[in-house]
Image (cartoon, rainbow, N blue to C red; front, side):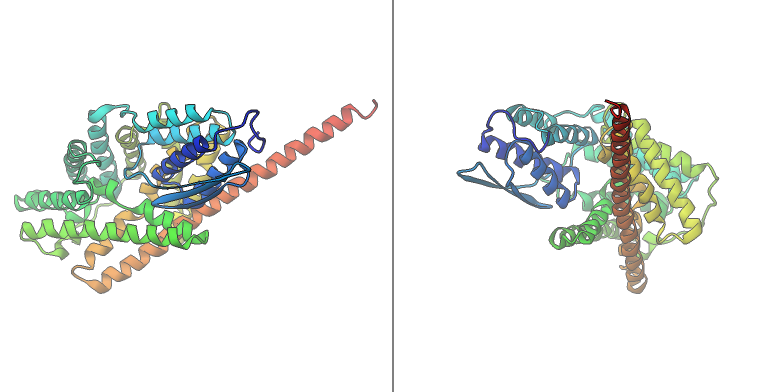
Length: 432
């Protein structure tokens, strides 16, 4: 149906408006630019515009459609704020309808506007509680002691309150990561000055998790692998700048408390994790993501399944092949599983279940520690950052291979099903 022209002619200006706004929404969801271009071209064909041209960048989209007599073009910038998971799920559901030409253009424009204005499912309280739970889960993954988990939860609560009271649309949106990092650093060293068992290397990462650009770094590497040099390089640079800003905030907070930059990455002791701790940490983290990012209804079991599969596979691969390439195997499992849940198990869109696994698999925390370490030991910091780039590359490759593997298997299964149906039809009509 998607390649067939609609029964009645469509208004090219209205189609252009819907395509433009849907492209903005896809970019805000974190979709790669090559996929945005393909989705919007497919949508234009579904409404009778076969010669649509789309060029997408992380910060904007250029669209041109031709109605047979006149060419209509538009250039629009991307949305300035990220979207919650319930909005992401609704946008991909709407995009699926548009790709089949199954929704009127004006109705699609109105529904998209409603999605972007939609309130959080769990309200501000759910956002704050979710951030607290999420930080506690990450604390359990990093250093599963009661003290560290409690500290991570308290700091996660503080950051959750700040994010709720100062939403991203305010004038403080740009310096917010620096301010939050400095605040967390001040609180950590303040608690340490009173003799509390706080280790900065384990306490600083959990509350800052939502500011870490692991997903941005990986998406940039994916786009470079696709040959999209402009988008890939810009995303990589954006992620690295975000790490530098966070490291600056951490160092500023430490300096305010009289600490040195190398105090940020010191660890006095290491604790062996109980076998069940990582699995429980992933479950707690998934619950926090569900609450904080207002995930769609009935999506929690699917999110936890993908998180457990990605984390478990990564840990097994780390034991067998080393941590540098373990992310490849984690995403190799998580990516096709997310698409399988969407297409065959009637679950939420793949992006909803796929995105949370980035925070578990992608080493944004490792990148932040490497940049922070450069403040006191540049050689060690550069070596660590080089390792991060290799790890990000392995995660990106796992994402690409996983998506390609899913498409290959589903296409082959589809051919086998069609062949079996044709053979059955021939046997049934052989004697007629």
